[in-house]
Image (cartoon, rainbow, N blue to C red):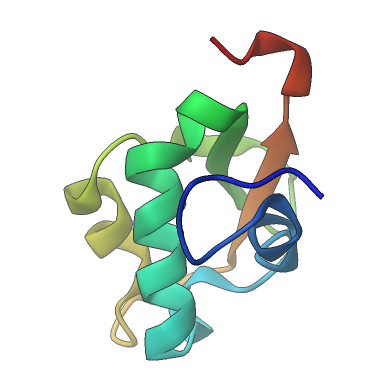
Length: 90
């Protein structure tokens, strides 16, 4: 297990992989925001992909990016893609 210096570890980040962005619980949204804002330090990269085409719609880099995709009123088939790049930690 790689600690991230917070209440979350990298296994937590991976639980978001493949989840429908508009259907996240409030706890999952909080965790997503944490990894979007702090995860790059630990090699965690999160993107929104279109479910049907698997094309990257946007790489999440701020809490405003998160807000665009996680609110329940969002319509669309957007999934979260979580990548770990452990060798890139600084």
